[in-house]
Length: 242
Image (cartoon, rainbow, N blue to C red; front, side, top):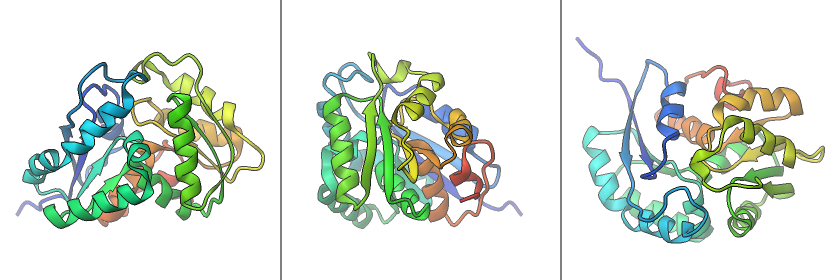
């Protein structure tokens, strides 16, 4: 008799070419992964017009979840960090409650997953970096502080023209750019920038936990699906070292 494996659902921004590959790379054989593209218009990945695209994605979440729910996922994850900066803490809590009530499936966000992961790491003092504009980087700082974290160092990656064109080398550059001896952990925001291949290296070179939005989202999705999976090579959070 064939056993039905748990299914993890991910909502991906429409122009994002990187996240499906990273999720597939992290995935194990004991569950399956499923994707639906969110709705946004304009130049995807550009810093210009990001707020408008974020809001469009938020507005269309019900129809996206309705489609993804057809595969009966154990959890639905919104793989887009900056939507949380648009929503704010209270707005995100209200949205999650509304969507979970409507669709009767656990719904998580990338930023909410980061918050959960930082609590799991017992990290209170945070260094973080983003590939975003200064405005959205400051929103990230404010949101971390709203959740009770102390931001000891932060910054945004210089010279970004399109988030989706960034590289793992630039992600590692960002880790070192914001690293601080005062930080308990380093957080790299931005699901669209590839990050998972530098997390272990970043931890080795800085001597502290390094997490990214998509690594935290994958970890949180597995937690909610009750999968005790150890994922190697992509940092201590996923491997279970922390």
